Length: 256
Length: 243
Ligand SMILES: Nc1ncnc2c1ncn2[C@@H]1O[C@H](COP(=O)(O)OP(=O)(O)OP(=O)(O)O)[C@@H](O)[C@H]1O
Ligand SMILES: [Mg+2]
Picture 1 (cartoon, chains in turn cyan, blue):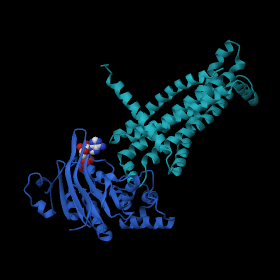
Picture 2: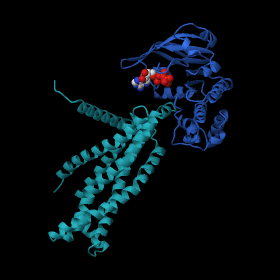
Picture 3: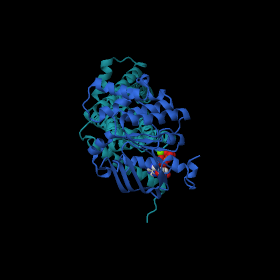
């Protein structure tokens, strides 16, 4: 028999469990009695809570990226291309991945901890005996909320990053708003924007479903809650990178 | 013969190699306070969760109000759970909701057609039963352990159940608060004619509420009797509980 180390085995087992959890999401998520109220509440919580952090980091990254690029661009005498280059970097990669990682840290951990403590204190069982399907009430609403709110946050974050970049350019030269954005958008095509937008749905799904999975199957005790919060961040961050890798392969096939 | 509301026959449940319940039998009659006594880890919570359908037993029959719990579908189970309430060992109050929202939750979920003033009236009545009307807009985290237990009790009472399953209602409370809860259990029985299954290892509580006691030892119904009968027993397995 082929020897498989234990940690690889448990990793694969967990992967299988998450896959099964996700199928349950698709099976039960669209059956009647959709929890609208809880869904909208979650959209608000998930989107609104990460807004300040996402906004701040997006602005700083846009600014820093521009400043870091300048010496090299100047060296090759193509500093007029800075807005185009920064625009592509932000929209295709930096915006989505950075926002998704911050989202995983902030929302993934809070979902993991919230569901974990509900599990430990039997609140999930209490819902079940109160005529509520806890999977639909907790998991489906949260996962759909992260799936829909992350793309919105990414669009906001891209926009804020571009303003940061605008400021970064204007520290050294004067460029008007319209001209800066004309330069950015002249070089962006749908091939840049659409795949980057689509992949954020998958990132959002990964953050939501992994956070819920970790919380739903939390070990007993307060320690278990900490572990499920922590491991949901780690696992969803890794998942985001892997999905990003897959996304770049797919979008490359459509590159002219 | 008296009316049987819960009848359990040959209930078995194991977790891996850990045999928790092994051919356990129990009958609860209407209007009775039945105590299940057993030491920690003997499977008392597992038993009560089997009754309400939260845990699937390996073997055995559980009939609640004449219905076979394992044979019910989701809808029928929800319907049964309106009549059978469960007080969780850890209270299980929703800590993201206020006391009022906690009490409204089962009312609004078990698709009854109630308007807001009816809901409000039922919430206040349930809180009045446990003497905590003033906490209605507080968060569970701001209440003491005994108050939380009483709020949890109010939440189980709000649907006017026929059967209440209490999982260690007095554990972790001081003796005086424990006595208050025990008296409350008796008051509720007298007021609503509920049948109660009470899990406990707190002898003060057992003495106050029990009409009949079932000893759960090694996964089996070891013996049963009244408090007086069992406390007079010389059996080395029973004696340690009563002193
Ligand atoms: N979901 C589960 N998975 C595995 N083992 C479990 C599970 N639930 C309970 N057990 C095991 O079943 C046994 C009985 O647990 P249970 O919670 O019923 O004890 P208890 O009698 O209620 O104890 P206590 O008085 O401490 O509440 C324990 O050994 C526990 O480890
Ligand atoms: Mg227990």
